[in-house]
Amino acid sequence: MTWDPAAYERASWEATGLYDGGAVAHAWGTETGWFEYAYEVVAPEAKGPPRRRGLACLTRFALRARVSSEYPGSTSPPDGASAFEVTLDG
Image 1 (cartoon, rainbow, N blue to C red):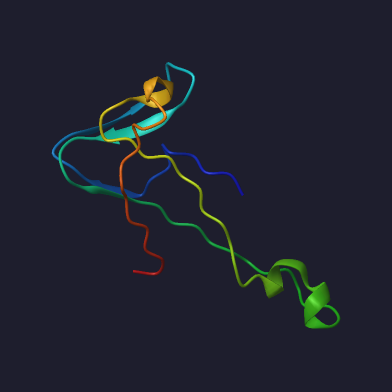
Image 2: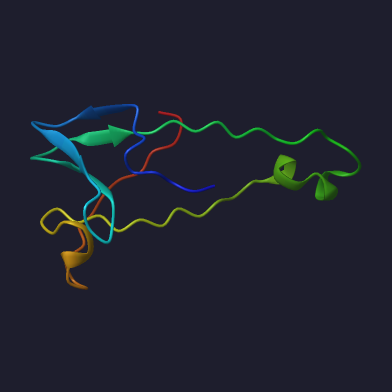
């Protein structure tokens, strides 16, 4: 699955926008706030033992993100990342 930063369902910021004119497309927000994304994970039809069901057995996933509070897109230096929080199902 790929992530599209512009595909958020809701956002709560003082101001927000989208930028895709550089090397990295991104959504931005000012001050403190959040973006909310929704994804539906559908397991394939169960056939055979659980270990052969593909996504039906998915119990872990990896989320990698680089979030910067000051630098847009690819202009962020290596130490320019910001702390962020991810929640699942609420």
